[in-house]
Image (cartoon, rainbow, N blue to C red; front, top):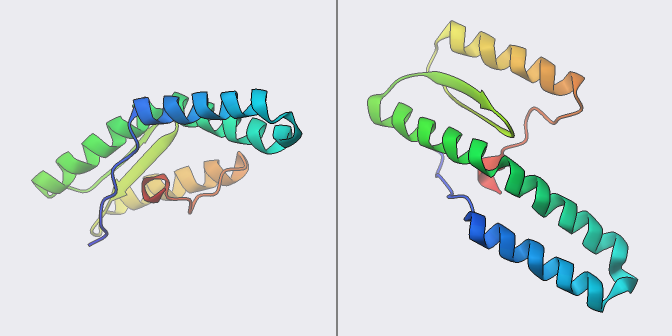
Length: 111
C-alpha cells in the first residue's frame, strides 16, 4: 500500500509565500525565479481546501474499505479495487486533464 504523505499546512504555505516576496524585494536580480515560486505558492494556497477535502475522503474510503473517485478544485483522488464505474470515471477525468494541459499522472499527494 502506498504511504500517505501529509500536506503542508496553510500556515506553512503562507510563510513560504511571504518569504519569497521578501526575497524578491531584497534580490530583484532573481525576479524570474522568485516570481515563478510566488505564483506556485499562490496556486498551492488556492488549491489547499480541495486537497484537504480529497485527503479526508480518501481516509474515509480506506477506513470503510470502499472504492471511490473524487474531483475537487485543484485535486482528485482514487481508490479502486476493480470497480468498473470508478475506473471509467477516472479514465474520463484523465481525458479531460489531457485536453486542459494537465498531467494526468501527476500525484499532488506525493509532493
